[in-house]
Length: 114
Length: 110
Image 1 (cartoon, rainbow over the protein chains, first blue to last red):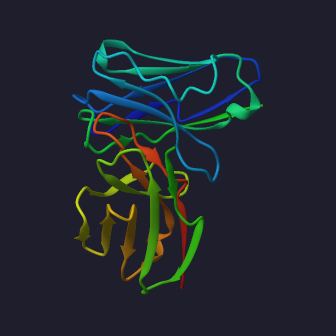
Image 2 (cartoon, each protein chain N blue to C red; image 1 turned 30 degrees about the vertical axis):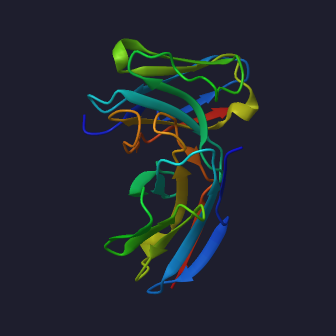
């Protein structure tokens, strides 16, 4: 694919349920980022993967949030026991490498927790 | 600490010029990005500044002053489609993720 893809595009879930969000980065990009954006707010960094290095998880808001990246490509962000405050747009971005490379964003997953 | 400041909202008239400012206080500096984000869409890359000065790309220009911790995005000949949020982001170190501002919502009026 030409760009970063994310699925699902929209997700409505009930409080307490687990959700999985998927990101397919641009082929060959070694760096992958997850962000969260609440309505009208800026981007909140969640987690960063770079190649085979240990991910930077410093932005994860609680232990209910986790992410993995398999084979250095596809990434999954998992939110366990969702809460209403988890409702937001979850954006994934990739870049060719760490450092100065531009980040290219996917269309996001809009999560609504009822 | 790390901090990026941008105005929350600005209004301008179609055909006019607008300047969106961004100031930053970070523990290091390796470059500053500007992104555009239309409502309900993902951010898209506009510009990247590392050295002081003005970089022009068509109707959009971006300026950086490293000594002042200051950047601006200049939009000329405004069009209605320029209505969007404009996000400023700083890379404090070469191997560190970006620090993002909250974005400036730009409203263009006819």
